[in-house]
Length: 174
Image (cartoon, rainbow, N blue to C red):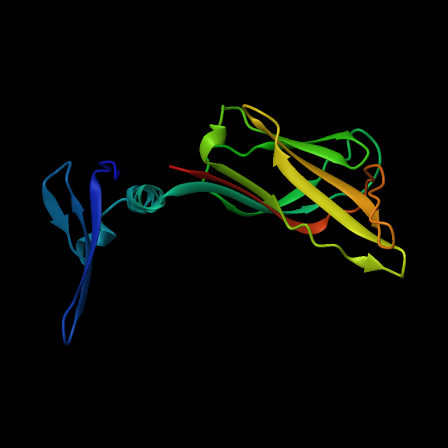
């Protein structure tokens, strides 16, 4: 469902010209390319963002996660690739190799997909990394990093310092 935003962006392609402008439904007139200089650029940007949000069938939070250190204050650092949620969630270190993401608002689990690239990087002949992500509840996700022994498949206790630019993605579908 597309919600009313007040503006509609249009582009008309002719053989010799390109005309671009905004239709302002709140004032019932058209802002053509010459009039755009008079339009408030903040309104134009807001309208474009609203159109972008309305056209997507999901909200997403995608980051690169890196974590170092072993103290309680050593939460993962998230480099945001994309965030179409209405807030920026907070990362917390819960314990060795265990981290959680917290939103202020409740998120419905039924249409939620949480992933963190679970690649296993083999180090030497003995072990590699094992990364798992999931959803904790009403407003929290988790990521856990451990070592896995290649010969036995045994997963060790969670360990700090294994996240280095791991892609974490949370998508909430409409």
